[in-house]
Length: 99
Image 1: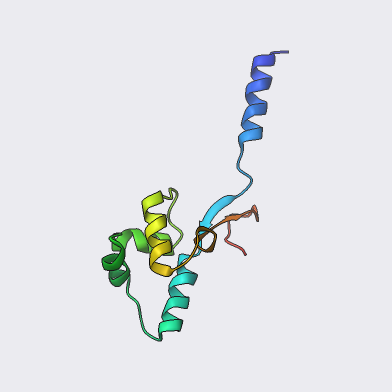
Image 2: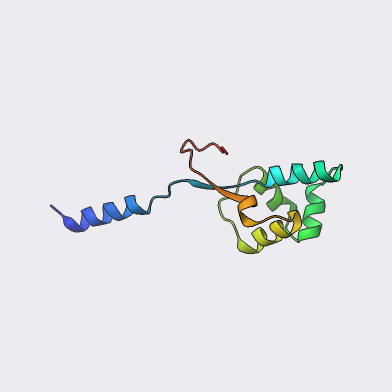
C-alpha cells in the first residue's frame, strides 16, 4: 500500500469545507429600506461605502466567492451590523442558501 498516497488523500478529506460561506446583504438592505421607509439604491450604498455598485450587486445576488476584509468592514459599518449579521456558513449541503 502506498502510504504517501493514502495520507495525501486523507488530508484532502480532512480539509474539505463543511459548508459554504454566504452573506445576508439582501436581507440587510431590505431591512434598512423598511426601517427608513425609503428606497436605497446600490449607487447610494456605493457612494457611502466606496464599494463599487457592481460589487454590491454581486454580493446581493450571492455571486461572490471571495470576501475581502475591507469590503466586509465597510458593509458592516454602513448597515450598523456585526460580522455574523452579514456572513454565515450554509451547512445545508445542497448549494442553496438556507437559514
